Amino acid sequence: MGLEQITPTRTFNLLYIILDSIFIIILIGLLLWKKKKSTLYFSLFGGILYFLVDYGYFYLISHSRIIYYNETICNNSITALILLWMSLSYGITNFAFIWLCLKKDEHLKEFLLLIIGWWLIIPSIASLGGANNIMTYRTTTAYHGYMALLLAIGYFILIIYNLCTSKEKRVNLLWLNGIGISVQFAWEFALLINGIRPFNENSLFTLIVDSLIETNLGMPIIFGIYKVVEAIHIRKQNQIAMDNIE
Image 1 (cartoon, rainbow, N blue to C red):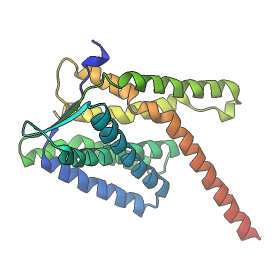
Image 2 (cartoon, one colour):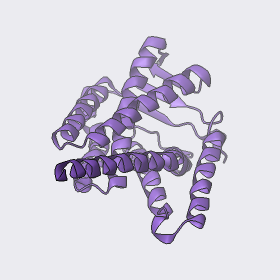
Image 3 (cartoon, helix red, strand yellow):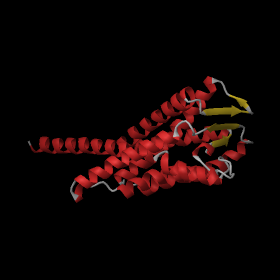
């Protein structure tokens, strides 16, 4: 079994899209309410980034993304709308998951329970809306090799950094890998056990490979962004403290 046999597929209905869209609005509202601005900004960035990759690269450039409605291939407009929802949904939740973990946020457990819990229960609620007549799938032959290469380069740079720096400044690579793998695994697993992803001879292989590569490849870059944002925040806090003293 090779990477060319991985064809991530999802089937869902219109109620699934509606309910999930409402949840995303609620999640954004909760982040605003708890004043988690950096998490919110990063989450929205994630949603936009996912759309650019999914619609721009997977659909327009590599032609590896296809969406069916009632067994008919969707046109460009419908495909763009469905991919916009999918991208905002998983981009916002994934990036919120990652950012809160990197921050070791005080409400980390509550938000992770909210996000993972929603991934687990939404298919059951959406089943009230009838049969799953929307199907999307993408082949991986065109890009998984590049993804693995980016992952290897990113973590190699961090390993070299750790070898060249003092102990107190080293990056916790196991923690970083744990975040990158667990966020993808959580929703891949939720999709699989709820029948959104079909269960077949490739299911376990798809679950493992996607979890190891797809989100995890961006963790070194995300960690770099997080450290820059954290440094800017600390600098601002110090400046405010200095201004108050003066």
